[in-house]
Image (cartoon, rainbow, N blue to C red; front, side, top):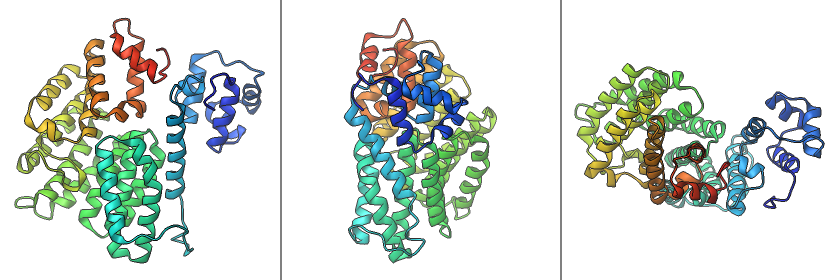
Length: 400
């Protein structure tokens, strides 16, 4: 499918089958007739409207560039799709619950734990293609380990689900991320700390899938549940979990349009962050004063105040804590800041920070639909710098 000479209709048919959709299901999701889909796939009907192409690409969960045959990195793009499908298969397996013997290489609990640590490190470095490649086997091994010995295998399985959910949110695979986060919450049940850790990813998923209203009370409840363990003299890991959950609640409130609630929650998180300090990564949260400041940037973007967002960005990047954040976190923050600059009609600075994000964690820009959407917007701006147009063209972004 890397051949750009193939008709668009053939590409539509290929991806529809890959997504395991019948023509009728595909037609229903598009709001079209089955006959219309059949004509498109046979080439009897031309796709000449940009809006229709965008709708088709959205239903098929691919970039329009791929649909049009302008994917200049087909091997990488298709490897990503294959990897996500393998992750889907690993998450969708019920063999263990049904008591079936699961095929695969047996691994020890220590090996699974090392694999989980490696997966988190790979994620935080922003190396998403590599992580996509190792997650299916890691999930299978962690699930087998939990089936053999639930208590010794629980932490590793929850952590495997957590990192999987985080990655899938980045890739725009919201429904699949929801499954991973839900599995993490289920396995963690009964352990207050593990539930709190899993709830951080649940908050990400709820926001990413348009459930911000539900996320606010859910994240608050999770935060205050871990708080009862004694935050006044509590250990930094507990403070970090509580603070991270308050941040998730705040970002959900901001997306839901409640600026007052978001600000109050972020102020609560900042109080906890001051007690934790920068340079730590308890429970893979990266929580600290700088992380809260980056969250303030995103919150301001969500409620449409670009000037405030840029001011918080300058504070976040101007302190020593900035360099302690994982590469993934820094690059994601820069993408949020690029959104703020675009809101302020400042394409030059939007392009500048987006290029910086690409330098820090290349996959954060090149594999995230959110970043590619920003590139598409920039390519349509007559004042966009040449460097950003070149990056967009390299990635096959439509309009470049």
